[in-house]
Length: 246
Image: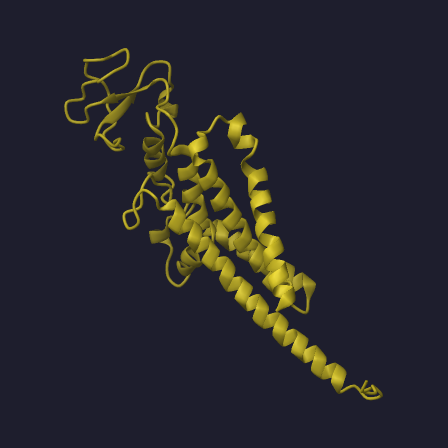
């Protein structure tokens, strides 16, 4: 138990350190992402790393180290494959769909995308427009009819259009949340809000990652307890081993 607890105490700050290396300085400040999402991004990545770290520690108890390594690789591969990004969750048949819900990337990817884009300022070259009348509210074509995208609306119910400075293939939205919804049309888990949890879905998703890590940690504790008990029984029953009472 002491070994297990010490390992847990050491792991947590190191997961945050690794999570920090993932996002700083590459995302903040090199990519220029909004700092308002920094703490969200750090927490989500640390929780996701810890879930996989706990799984690796569980598989390390295997008698065959190569088999333990392959088990961990399978978990990572399944988590990546069943993240819902490459294969929509609704298109995956049962019982394989269960992997989408019990492995970390299904929850980590949309939460990280939200932390990266939801807090950004309106992008240059994209402007608001009325999705019904198709009239532009601002920009170089203000007051005229434009090709207004009505599928991803902002918090005021307005669509967006892009001026000539932005290529059509790069026009995904004016706000970060509009861009998330545009990406979500192709990559299903990406979203600006969750229908069940709301706009702050990133935190419940992070807690799901913590729950996965705790599951593997409990299994790890059970396995090492069983392993140590077996070894102690074998050592106690070895012929020629004298017991000494002090």
